[in-house]
Length: 479
Image (cartoon, rainbow, N blue to C red; front, side):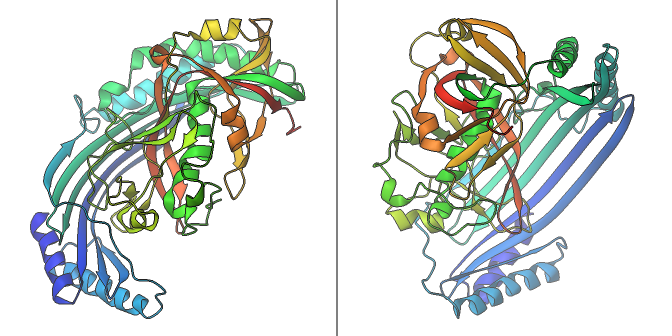
């Protein structure tokens, strides 16, 4: 790997590149799915290739190849330089990278059991056993289970002198039960947090232990009354919060979007640089911390695809907007002397772009349990899990759903609801947060399939949170 990466760097320099970096990456993937009493899908892939990125005449050029012969790699490097020079003719402003010290480093995520060494029949048997337990519950018409296993092996070399290597394993599993009746269908899901851990993260005992509860709640969901239309206090669980954090904070604080570089997929942002340290993003209780050093975090890779070391930094501090996720190209646009390491590509054939880091809502500072929070809520809804969502182009006006909805009256859960959606504006919503459970209840959930860019790239990242309450939020308007 290192020798062929060196060939790419040498070729880029000989062709006139002012800067070049090379990623040689191997992606192992297994995606397994089961539907009712059969295995409905097995995808097992092994993808290996090289991407070379160059700066020449102040412009980027990039090329990738899955052919790692010397001749093909030299051709890719030469093509990257040619693309950069052609692009330079249309430049308004030359690309300038903030400095990053050269280093040699090896990163490996914790992995006790290699998921690709576990026999396939053991994995498929677990999925079928889950579905069998779901299906035996009266009223369940459809059961679905899945497992996703990933291993990324990456080598990064640059003309700055960095020599970096990483191996990251990601594992996740979950399932859904669906009840059908009365011309309606309702589901309930269970998905423990995906982590950068080995197969030890696939806890068969826990997955099986929750099947009866999930099935019973799917049936309960089918017969639940409709969500009232109006305003309610909301208590959101960590999994539901993970998606709200992702869409209303994570994407809004990617610096390329805020600068207008990225507009696909609702790609702009209201959180423009003039608002940095001037915008109240949430209440004084609300702090968001980016941490790409987080243990088992989905974006914990040791270094990004700019060759920048993983870091921890503030995005929102005590309600005040204070930071972005950046790359080496855009960090200097707001006067930063160094990138915080937020630039990643999803494939050896993709150019790195700014991505959401591991971004978490910090837990409350005072002792507070979920039961105490519910007991302190007079008229509200407790929402568990993720559902559908929509958000506008500027990441301001949004609507979210969920997976299970529990009505709260006078401090007690009195039953389930269906068709619950909540609507708000980003800063209004986070500004309404008046309570967050403490660190004992903080869970690092996350997103495995974040789409960004055109052509789209898919990335993963963790969003940790503890249950939190939001006052006087509009619900039911989607009806």
